[in-house]
Amino acid sequence: MMHKNRKHRKIAAFFLLGACVLIFFILNICIGSVRIALPDVARIFSGQESNGTVTRILWDIRLPRAIAVLLLGGALSLAGYLLQTFFNNPIAGPFVLGISSGAKMVVALVMVFLMGRGVRMTSATMILAAFIGAMLSMGFVLLMSHRIHNMSMLVVSGVMIGYICSAVTELVVTFANDADIVNLHNWSRGSFSGMTWENVKVMTVVVAAASLTVFLMSKPLGAYQLGDVYARNVGVNLRLLRVCIVIFSSILSACIVAFAGPISFVGIAVPHLVKKLLNTTEPIWMIPACFVGGSAFCLFCDLLAKTILAPTELSISTVTAIFGAPVVLWIIKRKANLRR
Amino acid sequence: MKNYYFSTKKMCVGYDNKPLIKDMEIELREGEILCLIGPNGAGKSTVLKSIAGQLGLLGGAVYLGEDDLSEMKAEELAKKMSVVFTERVRVELKSCRDMVATGRYPYTGWFGILSEADERIVDEMMQLTHITDISEKDFGKISDGQKQRVMLARAICQEPEIVILDEPTSYLDIKYKLEFLLLLQEMREKKGLTVIMSLHELELAKIVSDKILCLKGEYVERYGTPEEIFESDFIERLYDMNEKDFIGNEKLLAYMKQIGKYER
Image (cartoon, rainbow over all chains, first blue to last red; front, side, top):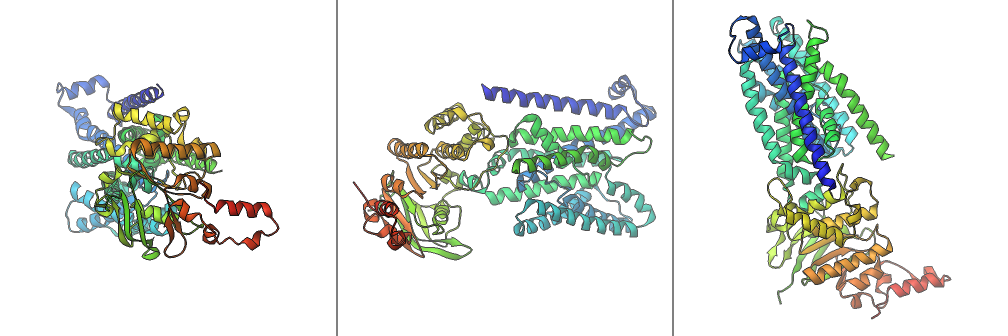
């Protein structure tokens, strides 16, 4: 009887998150420098109106951007959830562990190198470069975690790695050609603007494939939460599982950095809020819920980034930090209370 | 004479390539209970972890029937052997029932969803371990003794043929200690469960075990039936207890003497 209620709560939570995604998605499409009324949107999508600036804005700017936010927000939150599970640490995430910054550094290096030779970067090269960077940082963090068993120190070393990578990135940006800088500067602060359909296509394939694979890993991930001894005892291949978690969290983080730059706090705050909402830690619920929750959160934040100081656009990290950082503080405080 | 259910051949255990205990030979028939005793730091947990495949062997082999444990598939082994170790399990938002249900892992499908039959087994094991009343309580918020029983329920939920228990009675009060040992004997009679565990309470080891393994130093100090172990002053020597230290305190001396003796 009790677990019937728990199940209902989870399903209700999914409906709530889904509704948020839908509402924010529509608002993102309608609101911007030009307001488009909902009936007009419907008319344009049904093909009754195909000319004019409004149609172009909708098809070429708003829609790809909103889809990108939906996918990348989900990916970011899922990457955070994977890292938290992996390190058994509620404040692990791609940003605090320096993984985003590592990815950013390699992308910036490759970008400047290619731009200097007049070559434009394709989406696939971006992801690959970001993946290599993410794996580099992840490698460092893993090396440190072998020596350091204290979780807060691990996070501190991650933050340090992040600073080093950011410093290198700044250096590269400073020495890049003037024309490149505008591009690089926006991106290196984190922004969802300037998404093309080509970007969207590539990220859809990568994010969908990675997220589905992660979902298929929910059973061993659930056993992993019990700790090494019991996971091994029920037959989990720990080494393989660890490798998979590292690779897929890096792919997901890489995807975000490649297209939107580093975005802070989503990876920590969203899984935590979703966990509270669903009242469970079971991966089979948490994986899809984190994805949907991340989408909703990022759509909401992007909406604010676009509108608060319009026509100037805020960097997305500014907004995610305002809403995400307090959640992190709250987690830390709760943990401290529990220890006492 | 090969019908032992569990055996080790020249097993050598230790950490980081440093052998701790060498040439261990253990032989158990199906349904036998083996207790490991010995002073603190003698390596009881290390031996149990090695037997359970949690720690690589430094030499020799462990057999279940005819099968070498190191060559068995992990999923296959999971259906035969389960463990309760002393490591703290830190989980969030998991009820005791959820925790017990994790024992069904080797039997469920790709997504780990419990069938009706699985649910029934979970209920049954919770009844056997007397934790039905705390079923919906948060695992993180119950007492150590209750946790111990939940973890035991989880272990038998795995429907093992052999269970490895590291100090399973340590947090239990006297009532649950006795109930726990009763449960082990019940499981042995009904399902032929073989048990290997470490115990600090010698009085209990004396009455429940079929075999006792005494650990101290580099080799197995002694391996045999309780009658063979609890004789003359062996226990005193095993734990480095000296009669002289107790002179003047007759009660403690008598207690020490009585523990070392085996009575039918």
